[in-house]
Image (tube, rainbow, N blue to C red):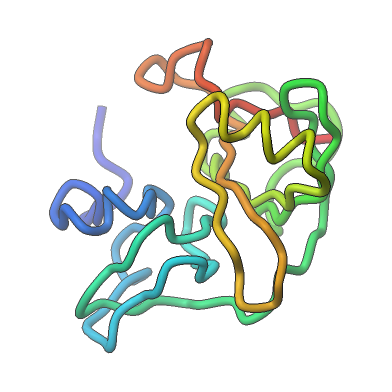
Length: 153
């Protein structure tokens, strides 16, 4: 199967992988002043919130959490930021895969406790929102039981 992108940043930069910036490809990142934890980064594969610092790189950083969809995650309905081209309505796993990464707001203590229990880091965005990274596509490496799996509504 041919590769769709020349650069998969998480494969080339350990700090990108550690920060969960799996959404970044090709020109999504470039040399810069660094990405701070809690920064929302838009990439070709959707949105993520940086889970730790990424030195010497920058990207398309989103200043405010702007939800454009809702998702169902572990019994919670959350406001989320999904790629603007992600399909609406019923979609196959294959249709969602290119837009796999979403950022969701954690609305209350119950959702926050659950995220902590299943091992999902909760990041504080500069606008005050508590955010988590979720995945809406499905593929073998991710695993069906991944605590990050969500259903886009």
